Image 1: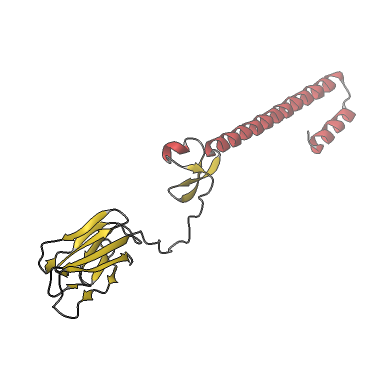
Image 2: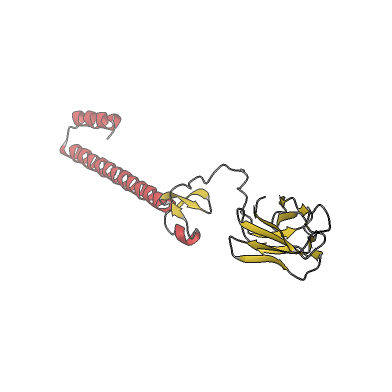
Length: 218
């Protein structure tokens, strides 16, 4: 009840002269009390409804968490996040290195052995010879036909650091062994690993003239 209403009731109480007037005054006061009570109840209901609306709004918003999905940090709703982001993990992503940095080169595992700086340069031996990959126990070249001639480049599996044993045999006359180059088949990198051998004349008798170990490098 506000102050104006209360002052009016007080004045009416002071002015009541008859029982009938007093009864009317009490009836008016009762009506005011009922109205006041109704207003107060409505206010409480409105306040309670507002609270429920706020809770409902918060509930619809849902709790959010931070996840790492496909190397990206995201903030998503916790409920059902694995259905939308399968394989995601809780928490921010862990840095994997400097963004934009050049990745380290992959090791070469397939090589070409040739007789020159080009991958298709033939290997020339006068007369015979062989190349053995000591590290893998595999022969790359076996030439024992007793004649000088070109040998096609050889593709082989290996890795940098493999040891190759190079041998040469002469059946008489001239003797030579061409340079050897290795080429990485995947990247095109190349390097000369043997400078070659050439005899000082062509009057040699039969015999071995070369037996060395060389290392595969790029």
